[in-house]
Image (cartoon, rainbow, N blue to C red; front, top):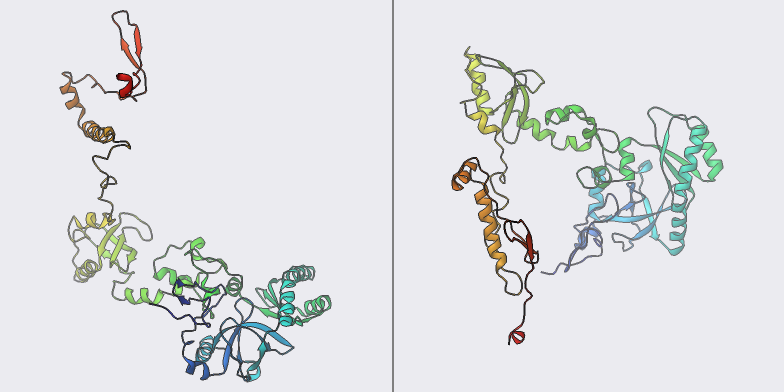
Length: 439
């Protein structure tokens, strides 16, 4: 089957006869799955344009310019013009704007001027080269002014007339003096934007502990608060090194499955209920929501004499306690605990040598001694597994060590005893002769 390659999705999950072209290298990349439908492009004049890192804007294509994903365009700005890359067009751009809750400045959408010209691209590249030196110098200026803030990134406008400084601060910062110093130093219009730790991690990007690109730099646009209660609901170990992400905050993915765990917990016994038996009291320790297995301990918040039972058995014990009865054991029978603690690894009972051949083929050249040697080695392993007393009985004396046959290489000289004097004579292997020499 031949897949149709479209210009709109080139470089972002576009299917070709040779397979997938791979994902887009840009952050917040979107797949335009309506690019093959002309009606979707004509249904809306909105165009989604992406700038540096995660900053996006939505503009009107009033000039009806033929735009496709990946085109570099010049767009209207409050001061001059900016340069960005088209990421979505048509109906999907309108839906993405509603999803991102984007609101234009002063309630009016800005317009797209044209496809970027070579001169526009040259000024854009020159402005991007100035960003890193500007950020380093701005950090030095902020430190000299004694401001408790960190400048994380600098973004120049496409024409180089404006610079946006992204900073992080714990509290409110009076940076009026800083703006005056920066304007006198760089001779551009200055705009300060405060961002959080999660937004900074999204702008920088990186790879998470799961091996994938950070969610904040790939698809997340809104960040909700994450508490340690989400980790407790999912029975995750309260280890700060594993709960926090690269931004230093609790990982956003803690909220992804917390609702599913909370719903599954409704069909399980309450964690505060104490199970009473004739011998001890058992407290909740941990829960396996997928297997519906609950582990109880005789000491609260400590792994002492752990017993794992099913949710049905826990409900049964709770009903017995309400009637004033105490079972002798927490588990249904004496063997339930042993069965639950057994490993469920499917490879645990399989031998590592189950695929080995008992008799391997011979060497190259038709020599089959290797196969016989493989059989002899298997026999030696079998004999070594027998009890030592059987080996002793075979030699006629239970206390005498069995003789072990020594195997030598055919090229190793053989030593033989000559008599009572104890002298040994070395016997070397005879060289092989061809049939002509024998004649």
